[in-house]
Length: 269
Image (tube, rainbow, N blue to C red):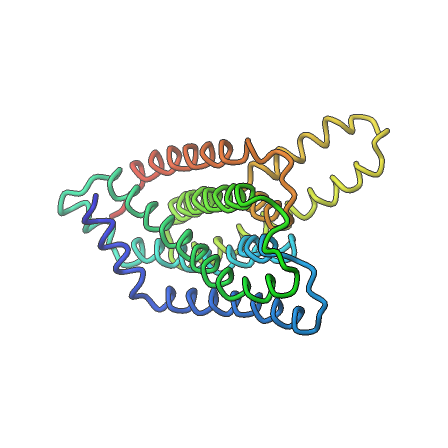
């Protein structure tokens, strides 16, 4: 599987889609950094480093911009294997269905998590100085809390990559996969936005029938969906942080198991 993984990563980083995704990620990072510097230059900055770094998972707690950047990249990369007949050739030379699927999944995880890490490194390095200079402190939370948010967010990114891989396996087409990847992110973001709205409504009306149960269900939905985890982290609002990595591992396991089952049954001729 090592050769498959190396070949997959090499093909991905040489692709035009990767270059565009990288430029888009750098542009998003530059936007956050410029806003940070502008606010602190004007003396209006009142946020510290944790809010800047967690913006790498979602903008203003509502829009998962990094997911929108990575979705076309992963979908086009995976869909090309079906369109170009690459998967059939891999099987012909002796690779197993399991090895092919897992190598593609790891490629997607490395690419998606790598883009997040790039943002964290650049945004952290470029924003630390103005934040410290204006407020005299980098963080309002403990370093351990920040590391926990980042670790949970990166694991959620791996779960999201597993879900994208499953969706592409279902569709098996470069064009359909790229469109579906974007629609999947937007649909999840829309559902999460509705969930946040419902939680705010229920918090204002605690006497409503079934309020506690409905609140628990909406919290569970947000903590299960990788997109929900991103947005919760970007809002710095994670009341059930302890269970989020467990749910991400569950999403990875379920998506991978379903994807392997479908891939083994798929006709690649």
